[in-house]
Amino acid sequence: PFSLKDFRRVLIVACGTSYHAGLVGKYWIEKYARVPVEVLYASELRYSDNPVSEKDLVIAISQSGETADTRFSALSAKERGALLLSIVNVMGSALDRESDYTLYTHAGPEIGVAATKTFTAQLAVLYSLAISNLEEKEELTQRLLKIPSLMEEVLSKAEEVKNIALNYTSYKNMLYLGRYFNYPIALEGALKLKEISYIHAEGYPAGEMKHGPIALIDEKMPTVVVAPKDRVYEKIISNIEEVLARRGIVIGVGFEGDQNLKGMCKHLIEVPPVEEDLSPFLTVLPLQLFAYYIADYLGLDVDQPRNLAKTVTVE
Image (cartoon, rainbow, N blue to C red; front, side):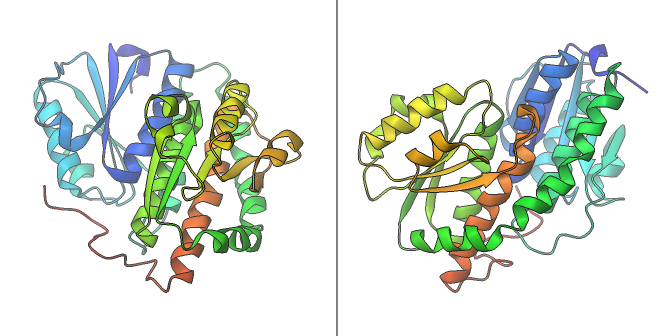
């Protein structure tokens, strides 16, 4: 019923893992639809003076469709004239009913509190939305359809990830670095570790490391670096060199056959090579497994972490 190009800008509002999906979506929408995108924490937009108007499309992302912060910030934007499109997993949820349009992720019920499969489904919806009005939509869709079998390849290496993860169960802090499409994946990897293993982890854009976090790096703080071969590969390799020069330990996530990266990392988890803009579908999986195996080793309930709820209906 509408094209992304009809709008002055796109505002994506979400919380937690859905926010990280929105950050990846921003790159896709700007790349393919050529429309500027802002991604905001829902809890921040609601009380901000952001000049939302009828020239804006607001995309609200929520697995449950009941997240209070996301609902209320989306509704306040809608009241100011913006068109509201929601991406939800639960049909008939409050956000679904309150939106002008809804895209469903059709991921099925997600029982664990920490979002995993719904994150992947949100990415698939955002990618499909970004390419929806392009002439080459069919060709780009075919690329997406190859992703599930590549994901199966990554998941088949779960035992390998487990063996790596067991080396890191006693650390108290970890740093996660990524650039470009994989900066949000670094954030998501750090969030998963925090949520289910209760280990402090910080996700950061790799290029920002020298503006502060580099002071934290030593042999007691492992650094997870997401480094597929993409347009910023050389840059992230130099970031890894910066970590190694400070006696840091590097756990890498990169493409199969990358001998250069292998030689720099204490441990490397490999994923099949894929187009740079589709790499988040694959690079996030080892980070989810890594957090899972650490939490499981520590005897923690990975489905029901302390202090967290699957659906956050309070502000």
